[in-house]
Image (cartoon, rainbow, N blue to C red; front, side, top):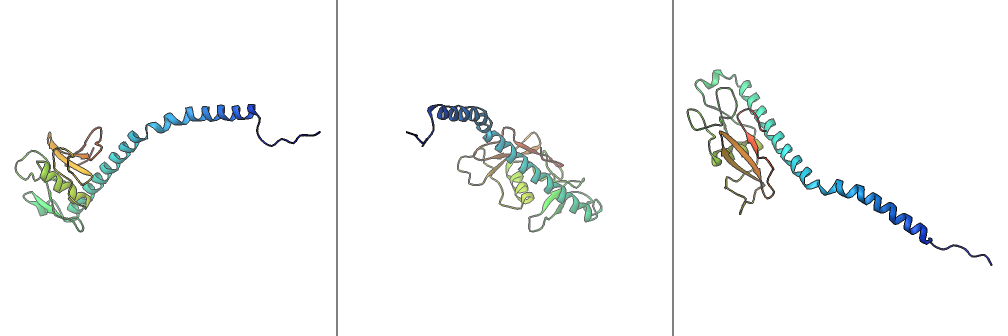
Length: 166
């Protein structure tokens, strides 16, 4: 009597399980570190947005005929639909230690600057993310505005100096 096969043999099933195990041992380690990669990509995106905004504001300052319009500094530039940003004599946001013409020198003023540059609500200027409902938090240290993320912070905060965000 001739028997027709209706299924897989034990050897075939074991081979499929072995192949799936090999694929899993290669794929799983690649996807375990996706959180770190996502956080780095988010930080890079925010820094890129800030750098673009700084260059747009600087370009607007140049288009206004500066530095002739800023004698003596500071002067302001207003992005489309935004709030005025105080510029230094070089045409960049006036960030630094308090002094003549320096407008952004603590967490609160830096938060206002970042909100103006990004065209959205001002980030929090709280010391930590407790109770913060916006995605970004801003501080000030060493003469630069520091941008952090809530609830998962960047490994290194974004340092927003007058000419760049790094």
